Amino acid sequence: MTSISKGNLVMGVIGSDVHIIGLRLLEVAFREADFRVTSLGICVTQSEFVGAALETNADAILVSSVYGHAELDCRGLREACVEAGLEDIALFVGGNLIVGSAPWEQVAKLFEGMGFDRAFPPGIRPKEAVAGVEAELSRIRAHPAGVPPHAP
Ligand code: B12
Image (tube, rainbow, N blue to C red; front, top):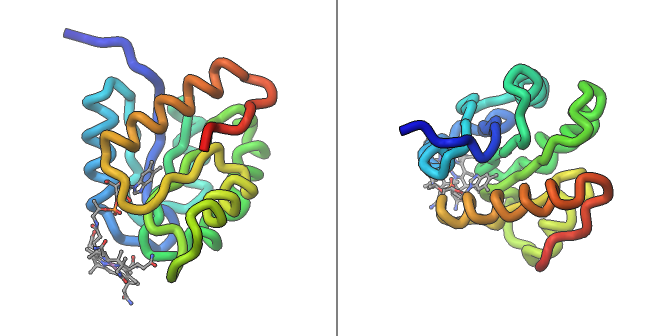
């Protein structure tokens, strides 16, 4: 039986990061939840994310970063999307985003300040990731211009 897609997602592990296991679990979970998934694998550049999003008419880009260098790798991605005409694309990031420890609120704020619609904390399970992304996409679709901040 064919089911209607809940949205087109582009996902991958950004930068020089080779941690693939989380991404593979996410691919399966999102496909099982009826999303259309284009996975770019590991060591993905910002321009590869943007190119794939344009090609697939993506609703969202999911960036995974596990090795601790997400800030460096992700900075400028929102601007690159806007420059490519993807003003409305949703951007999500998750994994182990920093080296060491800092209060999660601080980390989330950092990435949301860089233009991500939501940052997901380390260690979340695939099902929680699906539920979180679904909730965010519904929120964004309900408020296309000027999205109010998500609930804490
Ligand atoms: C396996 C592993 C490796 C393997 C990776 C093999 C492979 N091809 O995947 C190898 C040996 C290659 C490796 C190398 C390195 N590793 Co390593 N590795 C791990 C380890 C043990 C497990 C990672 C894993 O697979 N977890 C299981 C998956 C399921 O979890 P996950 O990746 O977190 O993903 C889940 C969630 O986070 C979330 N998620 C992830 N991304 C996203 C994105 C979105 C949008 C959403 C919603 C959710 C989401 O959903 C996923 C599914 O539940 C961890 C320690 C640990 N116990 O976590 C260290 C760890 C990640 N590695 C670490 C480090 C430092 C390195 C190296 C830099 C070490 C070195 N000095 O060489 C290199 C980096 C190499 C590189 N260029 O990437 C650190 C990272 C530290 C940090 N971020 O602060 C960790 C945490 C170990 C540690 N405690 O220090 N590593």
